[in-house]
Image 1: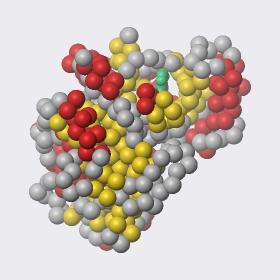
Image 2: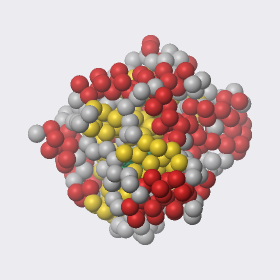
Image 3: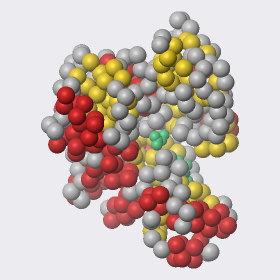
Image 4: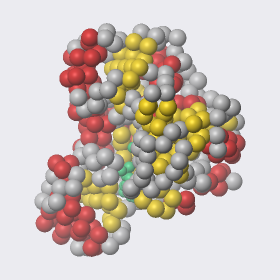
Length: 420
Ligand code: AMP
Ligand code: GLY
């Protein structure tokens, strides 16, 4: 079969590597992919060009498409591809709204009693400003729509809250995404990412993960797209997992079904384990990045079979097994990211590397792979336990070379502490 994967980052590279293991797949196209994806044929069409991607898929007789990023899912790429007869992995537009609109997802959780932070929705700037005059601090301000992962502002002071509201609703720094905002209660506790396969009726959680969003060690510095991940997440104990399944995961897919928005694909639960139990911080309608880089390497079963079963509604009959092991992914970024940085440097990898190099911000220039973005690549290692996985990932980063490389030195450190 011919399969296309939409997207260009480390998440997509990981999906491609895993699909490559499936005996059923003959050829993989990455649209647009990146220069480090040697396993795929690159097709240079931007992910938001839905019509062009449909044309390409039809002309090239693509059998199945995995739509990985949020933008095309929320814009309805799955509906468009289904419309030309091509089955997909990923939710349709009606279901992708669970990530596309925070107002929708908060109201869904309220209606169906799914635990989340208390909140209010504002479409009127004066009312929002009035509310934050007396709101408990810190307070959390979220643009309704997609905002390149930057739509959440945690305001420590009233001035910060006011500025955030003005910049989102008045200056429209996130465009129409800021027509409505959610202002919510600030929660505390460890964060856990759980990705789950679902066909709309059955839901199978994957191994839990922990992201590291800040640029610098000790969770300091600016927010980034993710500087590294570990799996499993030690805060996600068996007890917590049971509560999540009964009170969050299953209620969410049942709620979506009741709303006429049956969700098929990968549903990502961003959770906070608070003193009052686990609560939903956010839903994503897709695999997480860089969570995927540690979750899929631990998957033992055939990813393509699982994806097909999510599409066909047969997940209850499909084997989904994870290794009893741990994984760590250390992101190697360009020095300066997430602000100004230089790239365009050749990347070399020693031939004796014992970890997987997952490319993200990379491009190809004849036979050389060059750094071409903030987060250049991830080094992902699997080992019997977390400590060994972290040590291995860090050791193997020494075998990857490019100028201006920067990595955090403490990915997984907090998780290890929690284990001990
Ligand atoms: P998001 O862009 O939705 O992933 O949010 C970014 C980060 O903001 C999350 O990973 C949390 O660390 C933080 N966050 C979001 N909502 C809350 C909240 N209600 N309380 C505390 N932290 C939050
Ligand atoms: N790592 C969080 C996300 O993919 O949005």
